[in-house]
Length: 126
Image (cartoon, rainbow, N blue to C red; front, side):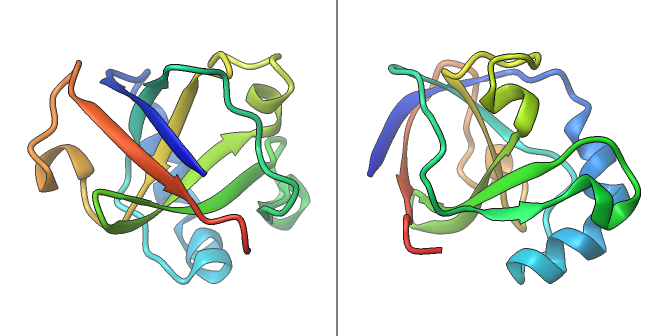
């Protein structure tokens, strides 16, 4: 599955959760995430595939559960992250916004700016 969209600025708060839950994300994905995500506004709303990697709130004593889907962006391995609230259209992001986590700051790595077009290839085999 291929998603297309444009880079947009985010709210700037996912870094806190990635940093705080780094060990959990590493255990689940095998990747140490850079503390921040790349936000992409898709051309079409996106719903998570049936198979995802889950970080349940109960695993870290929190209140927010997150689904993670392996993906690649410009050939770089990454993970699409989405909270349950955003997936259920109760969160801060509409379903056209996806957040991509990686082991590098993707904006710097690919010299991306708001408005740049990107493609995200979703790995549905997790």
